[in-house]
Image 1 (tube, helix red, strand yellow):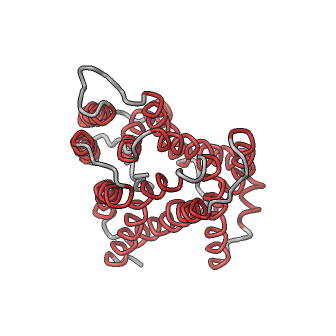
Image 2 (cartoon, helix red, strand yellow):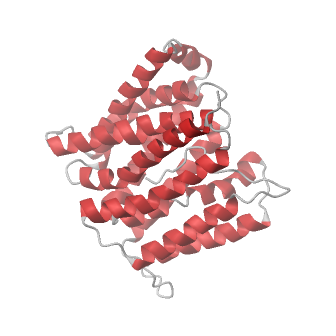
Length: 306
């Protein structure tokens, strides 16, 4: 049943979760390496998702889905969580969290570009305006406002943050081919990705997970970034009478996230970050303007301010 009040509550709950994760990422990476953080977070998220499937009576669907399309769900898992978060966490490890999370917001603009060759969609005039404005905002953030010099504080970190947007956009494009239950699909892809993430941890890090602070942060990320937030967003979309109003709640997340980074991590928020973020948010709002030819609506997940 449609219930806009419930939709707002679930939507705000998801946004609240996503507002905290940049802080959780940055604090946790003081104790765990990116592969270690992802390993514990993914395992924690799987437990949450399995519990939800048990409650919904859908646990048996995991085997049904796996037998029907094993390669598809393995590919989903390789993109998200494995490759996406490994690269994103590396970006957070190298950059100030405010830069990594704000650059990550350009994934919706990247999705518009990728939708042309992969989904056969056309780019509208306002989409081109959004693309230019959004990536100009990303450049403002990456150069701390010194656009003419093109002097990046950490070019590799910036590149990783932008590459993560390609992977995330690709994941959602692939998801358009998923006609099954989204929670079942997410659980299955996470389960298939877990051995890959464990292998990545063995190759690029180790299993010395002794810091309790790292465990707290990683479990938090798994529960609230990968688990509860996703489910609450799905519930918000399910109950929404007007999905556009709920989707627009996501624009609260990056600004709330910057405030938490200042208060909890102690990052000085650069003026260039605020200017660049406003440009990116403006670009995303421009993208949502309806026209005779519709481009991809990027906020299937909401974010992911991550």
